[in-house]
Image (cartoon, rainbow, N blue to C red; front, side, top):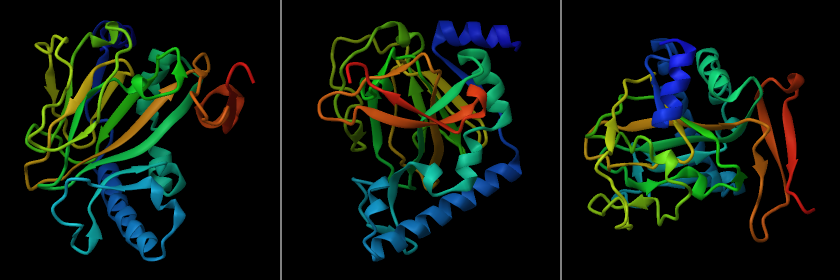
Length: 268
């Protein structure tokens, strides 16, 4: 597809899939890094490291550990702990597509590993990312890069095409048990929901207003993804309540080669 075709599809449907974004060697490196980060989490638990707050255990796992390592649901701020995932956020092929969709200047809102351990991974309730993010306008792009094969059996993404046109809605809990409904609302048309299986190394991009979620992992295969969210400098930081009125964001590309930018909420 040409860049114009990709942009048109994304604007109409709210999502796009990049097949085989990464090479087999890059996928293997990431898989090894996921293992290292689990080992790091075990070390941090042992020494009661305060940074452990970025390593969240799987809330519905029957066992606290597998193979001597903690059963994790996600790892936030991966750039702080991994050069591998710092580099992946600026993967050249990914940047080509994002530049077409958002422009040359890109900031990073989120850098996360989402993990669904074998037989343990909880379901993720349907939601819109922008319902939880203090960014205005809600025009970010979330990128989920499959580090293992992502299938319906191990909880691949579900998306509702064109739902980015529904406007900003309110949602409930995201982490859910395997037998729970993925949504508490009864006023939505979910008939258009599709599953998006991905081969390891491929990526799903979607608008931050697209309704999405995922089922539980009922298989013996883990489903691990590197999750990033990007935005152009036209998006403003608008925190609520007592949240900090300013926040620094890494620059992924453009903006004169700067490495980060501090955004200050209006009214300070």
